[in-house]
Length: 301
Image (cartoon, rainbow, N blue to C red):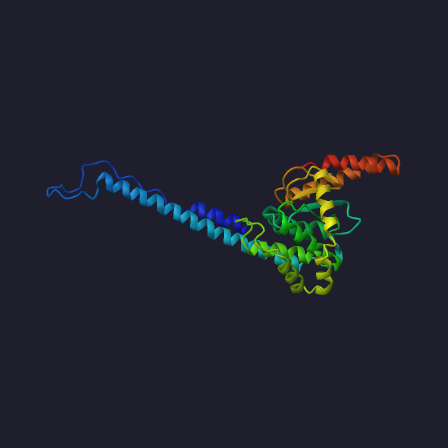
């Protein structure tokens, strides 16, 4: 169970137990002989019930905010760990993994997207650790900046980082900034996190050649590439983020629920390719059969 799941379960089970109803019997309440107000009157009980409801709401709000802070810290921590463990020898531009890997995953993402943040911290890091490093998978990041101006600026900046083979470090940095700001639980768009000045600052913090980076960024050198990738995603029917291709085939709506689903997808594709290769009579037939089989095998579980 993850830290976040444990906190949710603790919050659920920590509610005060329901009190036992008193047994029926003669009233122990003293008679009201002096004409004063009865502290057990209907009005008093209703007022106390109202206070109890307010208290429950306040506690729920406090717990929700505290849980959000913890989740943000967890995501940032996971991303920092993933950055430290990046297989630098397997990085080439926006790709990570061996070119001969049998399974090619393309992810279309937006740096302001909270779901992309969660996918990157919780799933991508596991895919890299388990499936990329083992040679089974290669991941390629492509841009689908659907959340407007700062998404586009972040996308072009990341491509300038890719020119210096620092895309994956920069990519992680941008998502760490979002995690630290609480984007996963309280989405805010175009609020300056990815202002031009900040995007340049992040490059400097990562040790990039800032003169080259700034020239690339200020000239919008990669804007056409970003625009073309967005158009390409739409042609595949991908309009939300994150969206995925597996060996050139759209994975379908939504994100797999976890590493277990990704393992199954990879296994299905490997088995489909092996079967197609064994059954095909010629190299060209093998390629065609493998493509067809892969399309079937990559259906979301």
